[in-house]
Length: 269
Ligand SMILES: [Zn+2]
Image (cartoon, rainbow, N blue to C red; front, side, top):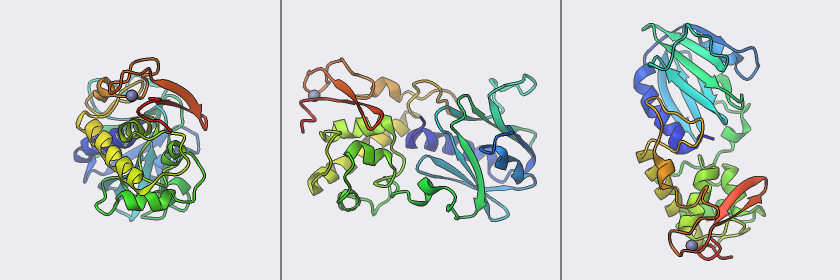
């Protein structure tokens, strides 16, 4: 699933392509999850922002087009791979722009979603409404994460995936950050110093991934191709291999329905 670095990479690349462009025509798959894509005809893209794993396109009429890529969603704009004359059964929405180019939302598994809301009104999208701080916000720190985690009974890995501690971290970067912070993913409470280590690790793994255009494991593509962070993962997906720090064999287990990899010595409970 695309996480913060992947969505932010797409945002940066897409912004310069669609900003100030007007949607001349729009269409979508019949599903309610994609139909709102049709309601932006005649509107102009005024800004493209990101919140967690959501893309928020501000339109001229004080509405926002919200795109969540889900598991396999891709946004493409006229590039050599994109030939609209060939019927693509995975194309879920498209927007013809006033420069004759087309923005396409492609989603093989259909876990993605498109919504159109009044600017800033996220009441229909609870994950977005209750989302924790952006990891690179200047006032986000270990104390803030510690306060948010305090009193919750879920495991720290599950809390990270829930988006309320901090925005934009999914399975890949949760495993990477907990490994780098030396925290066991099954912990149900963390100390203030541990929270600070986790914040530092989250920032480090996200910014490294961002520099590399994201992590491409299966479907993720940014506008210019694949990311390269998959070649630099320290923990995620490395079960059965030696820990780069201590040489012990990394283990994996399911934690709250999500596969989790960790080092039993570096991340001792
Ligand atoms: Zn280790």
